[in-house]
Image (tube, rainbow, N blue to C red; front, side, top):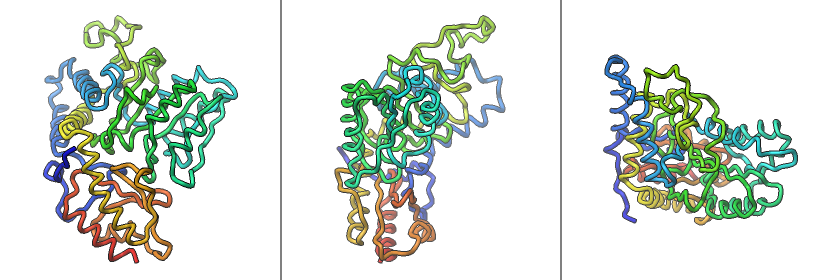
Length: 382
C-alpha cells in the first residue's frame, strides 16, 4: 500500500500545533467545515429547502459507508451517537434474552457499550460478565476463551479504547457464529483508520461514533444492522422512517410501513443541515484516501514514536497486540511528572486513558510535528 504524504493542507491546523489525539476528537476537514457553514446559512432561506433535502444526505451516507466499509447500503442507519446505536442493539436483543443468559463485555470498556447491557441484564435476568484484562495484552484470546455455552451476547469494541490494544474481530466473529452468540461491535476507535470486512466479521450490530476516525462532525454516528435484525423495533417512531414520507402532502395518511432496511433505526431529523453535509464530505475523503492506505501511513508514524518510547524505557504492547493507528504506552517508574501537561505546554497534544499514554495521529501530522514530539519525549522522559 502506498504511504500517503501529510494531508495537513486539507485541515485548519496552525503550524505550531502538533496534534496526536485523534482517538479523543479528530480535527475537521476544511471541506466539511465549508459544507457545514453552508448548512448553517441554509436555515436563513427555508424556502429553498425541498422535501428531498430531508433524505438525500442520509442516502448518500449509506452508499458511501457500504462502498468503504462493506455491507449493503440498506443496512446502515444514521444515528447521533454510539450510545444511541448500542441502545438500539440492546433493545432489539432484549426479547431474545432470558434469566441465566450471559452478556460478555471486557474490562475497562467505554461506558457507552457497558451501560445499555447493564440495563438489559437487569430487565431480563441475564448476567453481565466482564472479561478481565489479560496479563499478556492478548484481548482476542481472552475473549475467545470466554465465548461458550450460555454466552448469548458478545459486546466488544474493535480495539481497546484506552490503549489501542488489538482485538481480532474476524476470529471473534467466527467464534460467535459457532457458539450461536450475538455479536455487537463498537468500532468507534477503528472504523475509518483500519481495514474492516463486514462480510468476514458478520456483526449483528456495529456502531461507530463519527467524530473520531471517521472525521465527521460531532452528533453523527453510523449504525449497521445485519439483515436478520432489521424487523426489530426502533428506539423512536420517526415519521421520516415511514414509507411515502417524501410526500409531505399525505403525511396525515399515517403509514405503519417502515422504509426498507435499517432506515427504521435512523434518528429523527436525520438530515440535519448542520451535521450530515460535513459527514458526507468526510466519508468522501476517506474513500479517496483508502482505508488501507490510511492504516499503513499511520502505522509508519506510530512505529517511529513507539521506537523512541521503547528506547526511553516505556512499556509497550508487542506489535502484534496493538493497532496500527493508535497505541498506548506506560512510562518508566523513574518518570514522576505529568507528560500530557508538559507536552501541552509545548503545543503537542496526546492523551492519557487509564494508566496508558495514548498516541493517535492522523494524516494531518507532518514530519515537523513528529520531530517535535520525538524531541520533546527525549527531553522530558528521563
